[in-house]
Length: 101
Image (cartoon, rainbow, N blue to C red):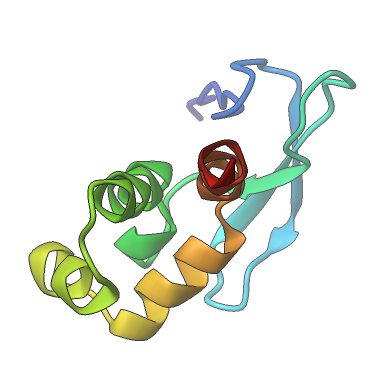
């Protein structure tokens, strides 16, 4: 039996425990570090749109003036996925607040 070290993608802590399964049957993990902002995560996502680097690319394209259709075409994902990611992105909200004045 091989033990595999699991690290939290947010804080890098190895204080991680199993925390059930996702709807697709993937193992869900929970970070037990009290200082970590993330509570649960999945080690390997079934959909690449959930990965943080894709969310960052969506934000970067939006800040640089690309529309949702253009972003969806470039990243090869649904327009709905792009719109939902932009609505949830707190970095983009902070960018809009600082540039309104």
